[in-house]
Length: 138
Image 1: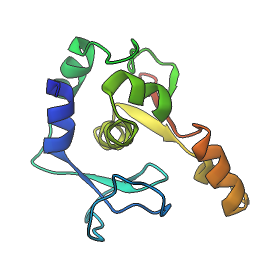
Image 2: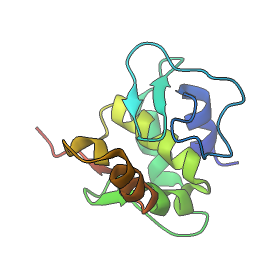
Image 3: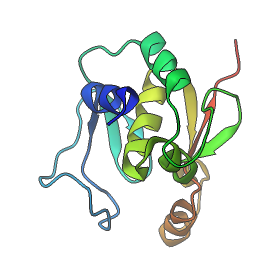
Image 4: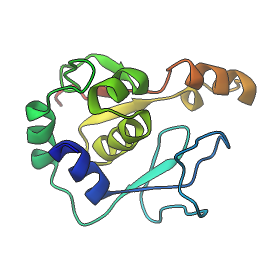
């Protein structure tokens, strides 16, 4: 496992699956407490005071498992693409939530579009429309 994967797992809490189809969801129904990020399929919270600068450094140093991606390039990156980069789509979603909570990027999910029926949102998310994009400098 990479240092980036280790950091994500050490410094984030993943809630239980909300879609009912994730095979890698936690065995017990757990929802993180405190401030959370909604990555459509589950909630993510931080733990053990992660340092955003350390996460940025690990992202820069990470060599992709199946593709090369730079999540800090200002482009929009979906969980499918990031999953190929970090090695697992569930871990990619967890990274996206952690990065959002640390202020590295914004999350873009179908839930941002008001009035869409749940089945359409589920279809959009399943086709990869859950993504992160680096925040523009203030």
